Length: 107
View (cartoon, rainbow, N blue to C red):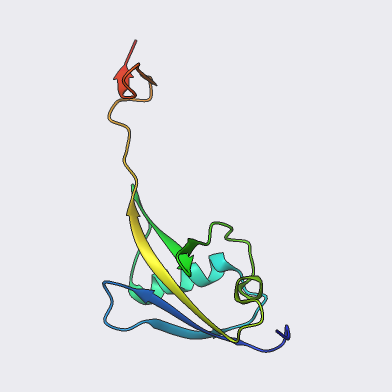
């Protein structure tokens, strides 16, 4: 894809009635698009809640990757945004994993 031609991007979020649609430069990063999508859907990452972008069921882990790299030779990019709850520690900072795989408090 030519680096000066914009991509047509759609981000789908299951809880939203409509996808977030935008045109983006191929040099824009996954992280930049994620921030725009979160804002468009009125979402905030906080505490133990995070959101991840997926392309063809593959998580886009590298937020510095460009959309052009993700799209390859395609002009359209359809992504899914999914919410994840990160399980927090059940104990204070002073903890260790015991033999059963659970966190156990120690002094």
